[in-house]
Each structure stands twice: as structure tokens, then as C-alpha cells.
Image 1 (cartoon, rainbow, N blue to C red):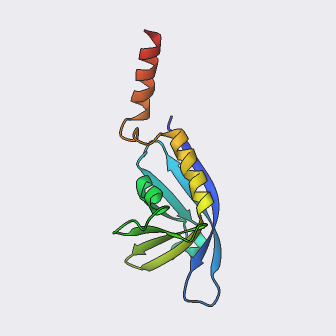
Image 2 (image 1 turned 60 degrees about the vertical axis):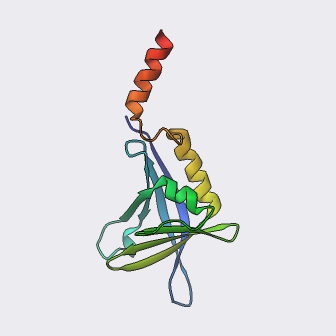
Image 3 (image 1 turned 180 degrees about the horizontal axis):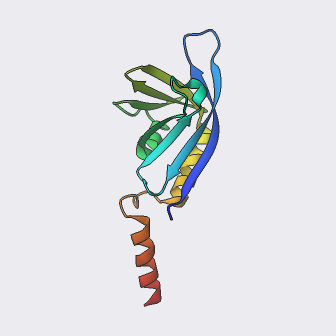
Length: 137
């Protein structure tokens, strides 16, 4: 059964309004899709009635903690020592979200405990079967 990591996070939605809006989002990682991470936004910020989920590469999030990263719909960059910016582009517009870097690092650490870096391309079930085979011989 795939392992799932979920971590709530408080973020700031940056707009041109005089005050930024604080939101609770959920960071998700599913070992069944080990190359991706997801950010789930609450229904209150959606044009529809359900939550909005953005999926993108775990490597993009990791790289964006150190240096500006991404060229497509998702861009990530450090903002000072304690903040990280995520920018999401869609046909409806752009959303700019500010995260505490510590929360993202904590989340990534949990994802790496679930599927270590470099092992994303090997199905977890096959890896477990191989581990059992090698330990039983």
C-alpha cells in the first residue's frame, strides 16, 4: 500500500491588496507518484466548490529552496533566509504564495523518509520485494 505524507501549512497569499491573506494549505506526497509533491488549497480560494490541487516535481521544490527554479506553470525561489515563494500560473491568472522555508524543509524530509532521493523511479513494491529476496538468501 502506498505511503502518503500530509502536512498542513500556513501560507500568505500575496496580492495587490493592502493586506496579504493567510491560508491553511496541505502539502501532500504519495509514494505511488514518487516524483511529485502537491499543494492543496482550500475551497474558499477556488472558483469552484472544491479544493484546488497543484502537482509539481519534488526536485523543483528542493531546488527552489536554494535558487530560483522553474520555467513553466510552477516557479519556486527563496525569499530571504526564512521564506520561500511559490508562483502558480494558470489560464485564470497567477497565484503567489509565501511559505515558511522551515515547513517546506520539514515536509521534504518526511517525503525522503518515505521514498529516498534517487529511488523515485523504482516502484516501492518492487523495491520491498527485492529487499525481502536479498534478506532471505
